[in-house]
Length: 139
Image (cartoon, rainbow, N blue to C red; front, top):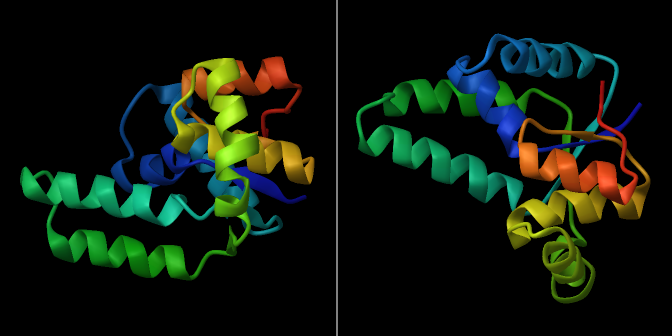
């Protein structure tokens, strides 16, 4: 089964920290990647890069560790949606307004709605918005 993957889950794979249930959920999503394909909005790569750059800037992680993680990501079946920007000023903006999300978070919701896919996320606001919008959480 294909699903939309939020950067919050991706970064939990990298850091491996947080609430035990969040770490377990991220692990479950990663395990599912063996049989499922994840789709991400085009903003996903920028979000991952931003988190890594900030973590490196405060010496939380090394560049080498970030590079090793990126190498691991390149081996996972993650497809980038090429139509994200075409929906940004209409569908995504509408969802951001309606549910009080950032446009970045709304892009994940927009993709899940457009493709009728469940959403894998650890972001609480995005989870609430997805539930209200009728998007199932990837389990």
